[in-house]
Image 1 (cartoon, helix red, strand yellow):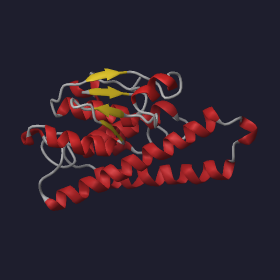
Image 2 (cartoon, one colour):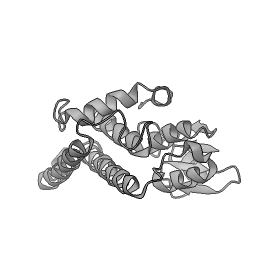
Image 3 (cartoon, rainbow, N blue to C red):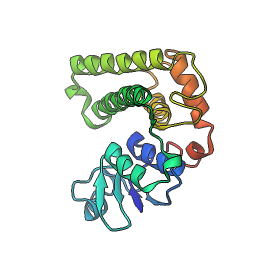
Length: 204
């Protein structure tokens, strides 16, 4: 399989780290949707990262849909999805909050980096910032001071996505979310980021 996109995207990194945990072999192609637009478009005309090209040549996009397919390919013993229905619901809530944090972080980054300063709309930035902080506040409550991992005895998708979201936010907009603002989230991310699967696919 071919994973296309830059690891500075939390969505691309989420797929890369998850595939490592699922023990699914893939080739990563660090193609930028900005700097290498035509090259990306040659693979996926929608130019959306992450893009995954399956062994059969099917082009997939959207990290959650890619990972849903990857779960079908992997050994069930390596699944990143809790089998228990209540644990699954909680995991989905955590993933949703983490993905919301990613989305709002990306919106702030794009507002700052892609829109001229005189055209940036502060009320919009304030609204997105409020949503971002709300997402992390709810994640803080979910993570709390529990065990090593959120949904079992090993890291699952909720752990992966929450950690990657935090790393992305802190690396890109550290002035918006302080390092000590959400200590449970920060501690969880630091624990996850020390694992080989995360170290092999760093945010860059």
